[in-house]
Image 1 (tube, rainbow, N blue to C red):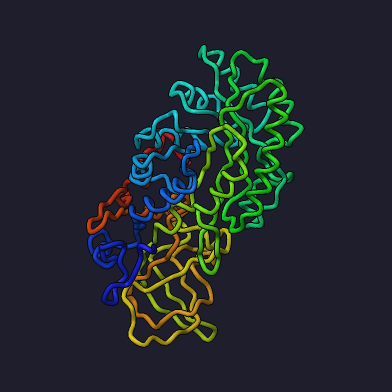
Image 2 (cartoon, rainbow, N blue to C red):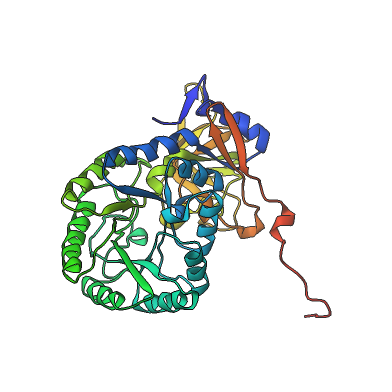
Length: 420
C-alpha cells in the first residue's frame, strides 16, 4: 500500500500532510513512512514462513538511526560495509549477532572493532583480506567468523554501475578461488567458517537471475561440505528492485518463496540482505520551486534541492516520479526540466518531464527517494545537508536536524603562524 496519497488535494505521508511538515521544518527535507518500512520487512518475513532465516537490512541504502531502530525492533539484522555503519547499527539497538560485514575494503581497525563486538560473520572478498583478518583475530586472541563471497558470474540485467555478480566486477571470489580459500581457512586456527555468500547486483526486477545464482551456490555448498566443512549460513545477498516508473518487480514474498523452494533440501539458515526493496518507496524528498524560467527551448523549474541532496538522477540518469504536493485543478502539462541550484549542468532531478503549470513557492515531492538518497548526499557547493523526518501514523518527528553553516566548518582550522 502506497503511504503517499492525496487527501483533499494535498499529498500526505500516512496521516500527515507534507505541506504541514514543510511549514514546520522548511525545505528541502526527506520524509519516511514507518508503516511502509514495517510492511515491507514483514513481507520478507512472511515469505520465509517457518524456514530458519535472518533478514539483514542493507544499511548503505538508508542509515538513519530511526530507520534502523524501526527495523531492528521488528527483528532485522544489518548488512554493513564499514565501521561507521557498524557503529550506527549498534547505536540503533541491532544486536551484534545479527550483523554481517560485507565490502571489499575492510581495514584492520574496522575488523578489530567488529571482532570486539562479536558480529555474526565477515563476508570475505579476497585472499589478502582473509590473511589480514586472521592476523587481527590472532592479535585479539579470537576466532573470526567468516563466509566467502562467491561471484556466480550471473548477469542481473540491471544498470552496469550496480551490477556486482559478473567476473569483470571487483566483488567476490571465483568458484575455483573460493574452494581454495575454504581449504586454507579450514586449517587456520584463528578463523571459524560459518557460511557462504553471494550478491549479484541491485535494482533487479526479475526472479531468474536470483534463482540462477542460488542454484550455482547450492552446487558449491555440496563441494564445500565434501571438504569436511559444515556451513551454518547461506547468505543470498540483496538486490530486489522497486518500481520507480513502470518496473514490475516480484513481491518480496514471491522472491523469498522461490528461494526457499530451491533451498528445501538444505538445512542452513538463509540470510537475505534487502535494502532498497524495504526503504526505497518509504521515502520522498520534498523541495520548493524557487524560480520558473523559460527560454526558446524549454521550461525550467529551479528548486531548492540539488544533485548533492539526491544524486541518483545525475549519477545513473535514474527516473524518480515527481508530484506536486498541492494538486492543481485541470492541469495542463508542459515539458520541463526540474533542476537544482548546484553549479553543474548535471544538476537535475528530472529532464524533459511533462509537468503541470506551477508557480514559484510550490512544493514538489520526489518519490522513491527512501533508498540511496540521503546516504549518498554531500555538502557539495557548501550546502548543508537536509533534515530527515519520520512519520508514525498521524505524528512526525525530525530524526536528523538540518545542518547549519557552522556545521559545515566544524573540525576545520586555519594553521596559526602560516601564510600563503
